[in-house]
Each structure stands twice: as C-alpha cells, then as structure tokens.
Image (tube, rainbow, N blue to C red; front, side, top):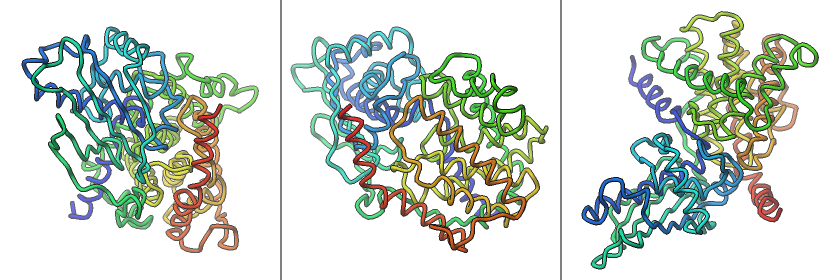
Length: 445
C-alpha cells in the first residue's frame, strides 16, 4: 500500500462510521454525556456507581441553527419521542462518550423513563447559539439535589464543533480542562479540502488491495439490516414498504424499484427511531444509507461478488465525501443529492463503465436535483431518499449510454471538478438565506 492509499483509507475510516440515530441530536447527547462524565471524574465521592439514573440534572444546550433544524422532528432511538431535549436527557442518564456516534447504544427502558421525566420537569433547556459554525453544540450540565456537594458546585460543559463527534473544549467548575483549535468557521464554514479528485478516487477504487478495503463491506451489514427492519416494521411513512408492496401494480419488479424500496426502507426505520445503527457518511446516517444501499441492492439483484461490491462502495463513499467537502457537514442542500451522486457512480462501475461514464453520471446528477432543500431531519426524508435513488439510476443509465449534460447547461462545466465546486457554492453560500428562511418557517408553525 502506498502512503497516499493509506491516507485515503484513513479518510474513509474517519468519515464512514456507525451512527445510532440521527447525528444532530446524537451530537447533543454526546456533548451532554461528556459533561456528565467530567462531573463524575471530578466528584468521585459525590457520584457513586449508578447515580446518573436518579440524579437531578439541569441541562442547558446551546446549538447552531442547523443542529436545531435537523434535531427538532427526528425520532430518538428506543424512546418513541422526537427532538433534542430527550436526546440531551438520555446523554445525561446513560450516554457513553467513548462510543462516539453510538453514544446511546447502552440505553435501557429505565433510562428512557428517567430521561422522559427530566424532559417533562423542564430540566432540559435548548437555545440557539450565536455562532458562525454550522455544526455547534455546547452542553452545560449542573448537578443539583442530593448528589451535589456543599464544597463545590458540580457543573461542567463540553463543546462540539464542525464534526458531530469532535469535542473541542471541556470545562469543570469554570476551569478549562481541554481546548483544541477552533475551526475558522467564518472562512470555510466547516468545509475541508482533502485534495481528492474524481480521477484519483476512481483509480484508488480500482487498484487498492482488496484486503485493505474489504472493511467497507460493513456498509452492507449495517445498512441492509436497517432496510430489512424498515420493510418488516411500520416505521415512519413506510415509504420503502409501500414501494416494495406495490412493485407489481405501480413501480415494476425491476432494479430501480428494488433499489428505491430498500434504500427508503432503511431511512424509514432510522428516522423513526429504530435502535439499529446506520453506517454513516460525512456525519450523516441518511447519507450513508443513500450512498450505499442502491449499490448493495444492485449486488443483491445481480449476484455481485464481494470484491466488486467493495470497490463500488469505496467509489460511491469517496465521491460523496469529496462533494461534501465543498459543502460542509450541514447546509440547506439535502444530503441525498450528494449521497445519491455517489451511488450513481457505484452503479456505473458495477455496470462496467469507466472514468468517463462516472464523470458523466456526476454531471447528470448535478444538472438534475441540485437545489433540493433540506428542511430538517424527519420521517419524510425517506421520500427524498427514494427520489435521489431514482435520479441516481437514471443518471447512471444515461451516462452508460454516452449521455452527459453539456457545459452549456446551467451550473455544469466541462471539468467535473468545477461542477462539483459549483454545487458546493450553491449549497453553502448560495442557499444560506434559504437555510434561515426554512428554520423560521419550522419554528413558527
């Protein structure tokens, strides 16, 4: 393995990881859990084993508007509830920060009961932070009642910035414990330059040793389990289930409807609070589902071997990471636009297409559904996911036939890298006002 190949593999490991629940409220739970753990570490006599389930916490959470938008209406795993307050309460009661985006993995029914009590008694307050960071959480936890101490005021905070699991500062009793460099949010809005190109991604996907990339098949393990759960249960709007159950009369028993149904079903389950984790991409579980499930569906439908599937998943995930690097982790542009572009590339590869067809698929996607807005995480995301998959298959088929939207059209350039940058500009800078308007509408309903 070359040093550059190792860099790319490390990038995939950072950006493609398991996540339990929608990652915006999960980031809140993570910050709260870290704050409570700091109190535990600094007050060992005050905080005996098992104390968290009965502790009188006061939790103040300050979040960026994008975190609020994506956390307001989404189901929290295992609770039957939606929103940031219950996620924050669970972070205090049972969160384990060492688990990262699976911070709530160890929750029990008793934990849920206690978290609901904290929410009902107004122990959790959520406000919008005055910050330029699109992804920002500051969780401050005060310990009151019988577990508190007369000698010290047990309170702590943890701050997350720019990545859903990136804790940049912690404090106990007004003393800073840790502070890392804060991202220059006013300049790059959380965007990152990984130095990738579509050409390099394509070549890496084809040439990297299989034993070094086979880990990506965990995508199939996690996201296929979510899809099957979504089809078996009655989650959310049951979009995937409706597509699969109407495949004969309406959608047709073909690859397109199969891919749409399986991918939407996974999103149905996840957004409604299923307790199974998703394999996320760029901090988004839905993006991880959409970037992988159409490719996995193709492999199931046409009996693709594991190595070809792994290379297709590497290609699809890296294309999504590459495009997302010009948008930032959160924006007004729906993540399924980015993720379904990645899956279009994976499908092209599995169909025998080369670099030219992969680039054409990206151009076709950019000229088709760029501009689909993100109006928060919710069960309705499954419909957008299904639309994204439909566009991905269409774009791939056209690309394989030699059809590519020309540079005379809209935001499309002859150079696919320039097109990708144009998508980034639209989603980050161009739609900034749109983002604020969407939040205003949501808050005033």
